Image 1 (spheres, rainbow, N blue to C red):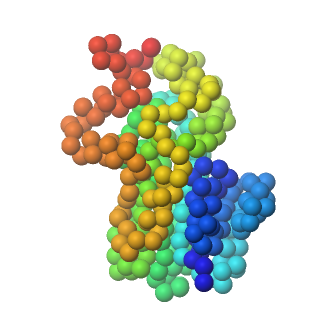
Image 2: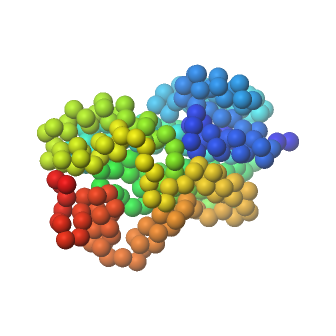
Length: 293
């Protein structure tokens, strides 16, 4: 019988690449999307594609039921991947933005994950949950507070589940700490920035940074980040996490994640702070703190 996996956020990027690659490897892939038109496109490409929108709990319940009805009540793996980002200085971020991003990036993941763990327990205590986390769940960069908070929460969630499931070695919880990957997350963050942050830019003490650095990068033509990789880099690690006998609790994908996780362990906090400020463009050696570049 085919191994079965539910993957969320399959309309593009990491989720789409993972779905295609695992299907080629013989998995029965349930490639969920949050929009009906994307589900229909995936179905036209030969996938089973339940609609799951993390911000709508009824779709989580209905989408998982659709999967379990199709498999006879079992599931081998879940890959939580769907999420959105939105940038902005911490002191500018409205509480409503935090509620919205946590609903999508964390609360919905918690809901689906806990439902799937019950499935794993009922089928004899075996299965794997792979969470697509981020290096921003380990190291915080300025202007990324909201997204980082959701990923730090996810890392704590993974650790808690792993500890609580120690008596069930057949159930594995794995986090992928993903670095720069070419996906549509930047483009898809634009409506969220326009809704919550753009109206606040003019009054922000960070106005010059928004206008001269942040917004040109967000709205301008796409420019590749240093060390940026294609989604197959994540898929390669995902395959390993799904199939190896003893997966590690977390995997760094790839060089920037390895580097910053290492630097966080060995450097004094103040040194890492300046590296992060330099990396985002808020500080240049000899030029001071660049609120107004």
